[in-house]
Image (cartoon, rainbow, N blue to C red; front, side, top):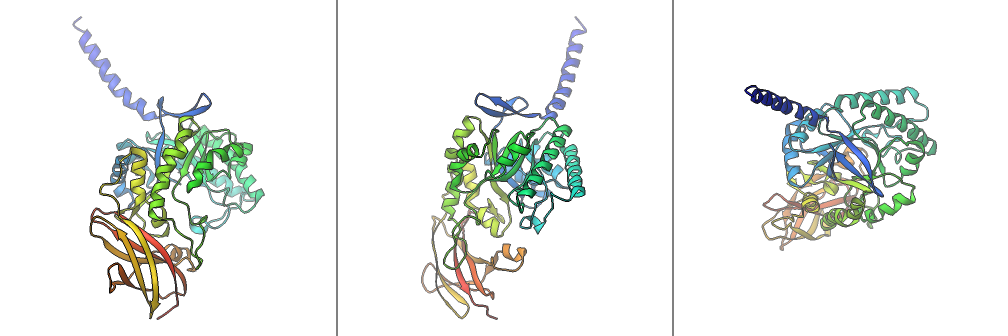
Length: 434
């Protein structure tokens, strides 16, 4: 009996040492559950409440980024690819109890996406093999990290393929990649990502090894998504891998040819409604396994102001919408509400602007512009602050217009003392002036 306690203590010590090693495996599985499926992490049910992740300033900020996202009720991040920063992100995610859908980038089939790259999936056999080997190398590099939830292969490549032969060639190649990823890492599911349900017919026909679909969806059309999945022949569970307000590519244009950006109230409401009402029934039945809202980034550019959760150091309505969707917590104090942004005339390079915002606290008002008719991608994405002066009556300003010829998007920006930034947009035609 005298030796029993030391032996027991030794066994407890061994168990303590072994348990963390078992937890590090972090096995993820999608298992059939009745008429649907369920996502499990280490044998426990897991519903993705996620955001896509670009970060606010690289690895130095990842710890703070993950800590802030955790307070919003976020449990999962999605990236589009891997790189030198991936380990730091996975480490920060693990520290704060988050998981990551790790993106495995595959090149698009035509210009229009990042860097206007284009790849020929029909003819470039050497290029296909190079992508396959690079993808598998990344899987082997990160597969044992406990923050990895699953792999997301490609992003809207089918959407960005020039013709049907290219789409089929890509789909056939994708099956080869998926099989190789699953062979290298049998512990994490593999999905592929495309726009709406465009990929489903091709995935069903040519990519049987996929565990789930990743669907990028924007706007109120999310209410029709489940029916569209069924109509497209979908037979597997799905994640919403990007979501937010209706995008520039689908909104109507105004009389000056500028896409009409949804208001901040609509941007907020569509996120909360999308999760609570459009997706909740399908999460419950096990068809939808989770959501990623686009996008956690501090970028002050066209896409960032339209769809982002942050703008520089300021929080946008989408930030608060994510928190309400995932936790039920509403913003306090209430966010300022833009009521009107109106250009009342242009004279000698200055616009007379009325900008009304309802707010319980004083606001810092500024104006900026974006020129979507610019010749380069960098210029088309840029948002530039404009000189402005208060007008002769409350709620009016004189705004100096930029020296570009054509229709520009004009932003009215209002920031409260809590760091919340709201925006309203309109358009104005600006003759080029010195």
